[in-house]
Length: 298
Image (cartoon, rainbow, N blue to C red; front, side, top):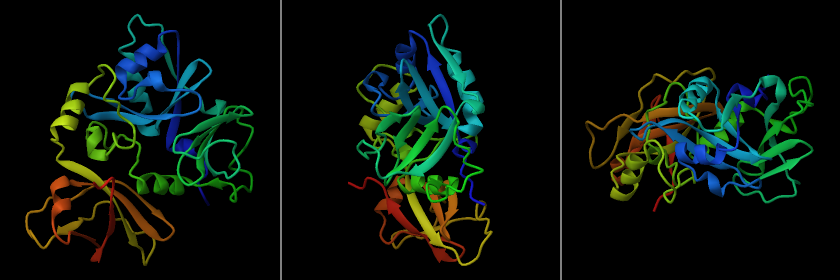
């Protein structure tokens, strides 16, 4: 059975209050002042060392802001960022699951552009464009029971959402990798998740220094592998890495995210950036070469 409930992976947070814009702008990598009702944005929330504690999508609806954050860290994230509210007129709440439904849907006829993160509200439902005419759909009345209706031709499952995300180099920080990566290790700034023109936020000095001094040692790549059997657990299997230039002592890539979709294994990997300059770089798992894709290659 397909899992059509996107809220098992990401949850919704509401930020309200007169000081919301100023507060969020002081905490997130994104310039919240540029946010409008026609476009959502990516954001990251970093530690003082510039490591991503959380990331996600933020959008504005009426006078409030809403965030989509990975489910396993949402409680920790809200608790952490709320510590800095102090006397600001800001309220941050995790939206109760009964107040909305969250799904992934392919839509061809919305009256809006299909650019990444473009958004539109229609009949109390908010649509955020993802990739290839597919949308994150937030329905505030919860008037569609996606589990008990035959909507497979409209709604897409969680594995497809994960596949589409990592195929484009994007994933949501979770409890297993929080505080592991600076944004540039995941090409997050090239996806539009970091503003270098706004004021300070936690970790801003580290993130800016990494950007302008070019001290990023790792980057992310997407890789895939045809599967001949099912139920293969490769999460703990080593990925061998080789090159014509240098055969030994190459650091094993780290698996950031993986999903099985359409009989293929899809992975987002973190790899040392210098390895991408080697001749005939090969990544091997289960005695097979992974097909990999470089993001934003200059």
